Length: 289
Ligand code: PAF
Image 1 (cartoon, rainbow, N blue to C red):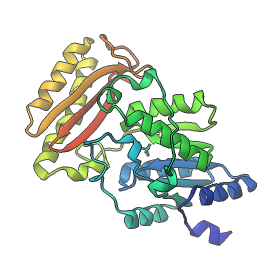
Image 2 (cartoon, rainbow, N blue to C red):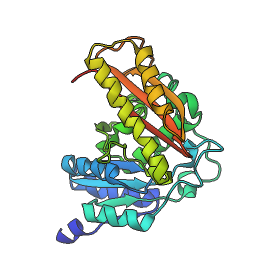
Image 3 (cartoon, rainbow, N blue to C red):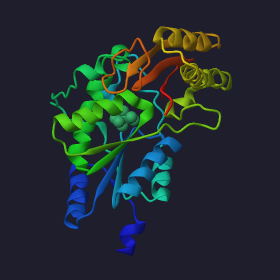
């Protein structure tokens, strides 16, 4: 038993993953899961801590999923450091890491798709045509391998969280989906593996993302309700910084992901901005809590 607590298992195949899961089931243990694409940062570790609080055993997956990248996106450049990731997981007390190769997840002949329809139409779905079908496919496959009771996702990918909740419900996957608040650097920058792409200069410009969201929230607390006015303000703040190219800034309903003209209690402002080569996303609830 003591040995089981101190050793983290590295599982490379679906079969090994399923075997680990079966053993947990036999012992009546609650299994928590955190899917990641690796290059772990404090944001990921916070998701794992949440899973460790809620479950008896926690599995983390590390897999850079090719099906969620479109041609021309950063699949090849996506940062990777498996040794460091494994060390961080081990130190945190994670019980198993599932790190399959691409051929294990998508062997020759693979041809199945999983689509969540309406929730994926707006925001990132508009600009990254393959992103959500790739995410829903890989998350379904990972859930089938790990069969967790619960899984923790970050609110930075707010639309992803809403889509995965729908997926789990629609397909009766039986996984409780838990959202975890965005983890930020002390200066406000939302943590992301893609922050490593930023030069010092670009990183300074990237602070305009969280700063402008906070400014929008302040305007709402002062009585502004017009989404167009808020979007214009945020865009102006971001565009005044060098190296920035806005992909979208939108006010949407937190449940439907559809645009809102007026800020109401479920309003979220979401944005995607290229800072240099890095495509960064961030979001904030606009309604005062
Ligand atoms: O959020 C991510 O890192 C990825 O989209 C996920 C959920 C691990 C699927 O590849």
